[in-house]
Image (cartoon, rainbow, N blue to C red; front, side):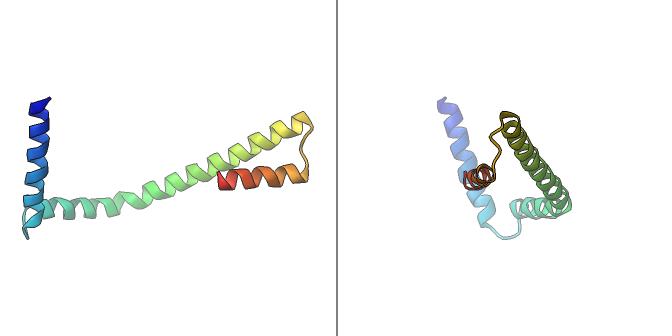
Length: 88
């Protein structure tokens, strides 16, 4: 456990020295990561937004269909459910 702590401490201290200097491998790694991120980030963002909205619609359909089956689907209940889902 003590060895692991010392190794982690050394990595943290050395990373400060690496990123503190000007043009070195640390800044090259960050630049390379930034360049590659700009290629795949829009694809992942678009896919994640689609999945989020699809799951939100599925949840609303599920909740409202359960309420309709129970016979407790009213306009006030719909608005209350939408407000509850929006703020929670």
